[in-house]
Length: 109
Image (cartoon, rainbow, N blue to C red; front, top):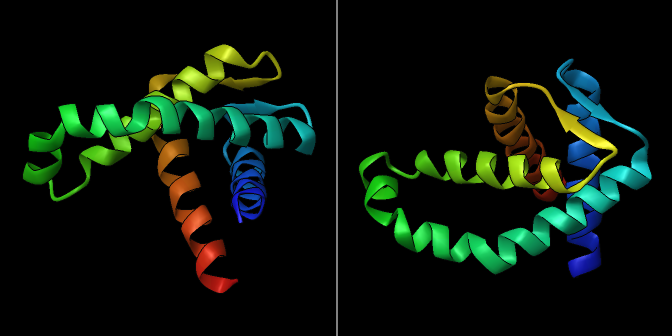
């Protein structure tokens, strides 16, 4: 099940990288690596960020979670050489689109 979720996230990352001009990704294999690294970072630190920012998440009705996702995506960008996001605004849009596409694909399948 975890491998299936990683593949779905990889497809979402790959699709968003083709749609958004500020994202450069080398290949689909790089998208898989990005999905794995993002998932590991999310597993290790995502819960802590959610707990620390819980008041903001409650006040914004969960929308602050996109800020956390953008931060995790930015961190992934800094760790992987073949994956590049240009600009903070592009990072926020990419995090939003990846979340939407990932949810859509999981909903369809």
